[in-house]
Image (cartoon, rainbow, N blue to C red):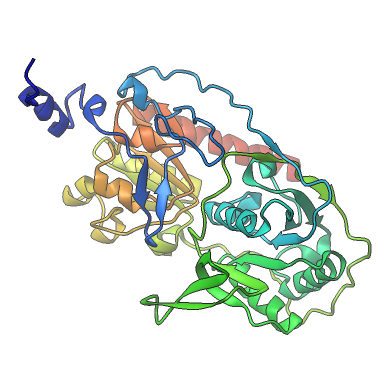
Length: 406
């Protein structure tokens, strides 16, 4: 038999034609790609992906079915339990917990903490106030310390520094890790460093060979220094924990945190027009594409949700949305906590632009489109009916809240 590799022109044509029903089946599965900060990211849902502990991951993305309309049920995998009975030292992490949940930045930070902890250390997560997170164990938390009370509510950086100093006195962590973010971690970390008299390592994107490597010179240069005790880490500083589950044992402070005489008074949140928020800074984006037929209904839904409006390139080119509302590699790269895509099929440029979003919700008629595969939650159906039902649900929720308040 001949060893000559024969081309299949029809298969090549299907691979180029995104509208063909078999297009998804002809696409290679990406097991790794380069993130926006130059870090190689790995796809834990890829076929045949083997983790660092030798565990084969299960494909939950529907790629094995070639974009079939019915996805197979995800197989429950029992991850090995990582226990540290008597920690030799602690690595303390103070996540931002925006909205009461761990963000992707927080999970990267926990991954970096486990690199520093090794086998003998334990990762101690310090959380302020009430939270909604129930995945601390799979995120890599060995010990969980919740500092609650009215003193920590709202914007109270001085009181939180007092709490962190009490944690430092009791547990004496080898390293402190905070996210270098605009969500509070960057400011809190610098305040805490000043209180401890430490010189923090900021904008750290890699810890390697006992050195912290951080961004400098407006992000154009790298600055290396010995590993600091207090590290303010950037996004993608490490791979998040995904191959093990942890105890997340609750711990408490042995002393009461003294209430500081705050020089800052929190007057509460101020209502902001979502349309005035720049796309790159918006946390909740409601984006429309070619599948939206009733744009008036789309605008009413965005107003009811209090979301910032976005659009695909097709919707912008057709004149339904302004150019500054375009999302994607050819428009604006967004980092929203929640991104809702209505009638957007998912061109590669658009998927690149929403790569840093935490949660993606897709509303589409085509269950095999690329946006459905990217989404964390998918709703298959006519967009007009779904948006009307969404408006009704929001109004019912608000009416119930008003009755409860009365």
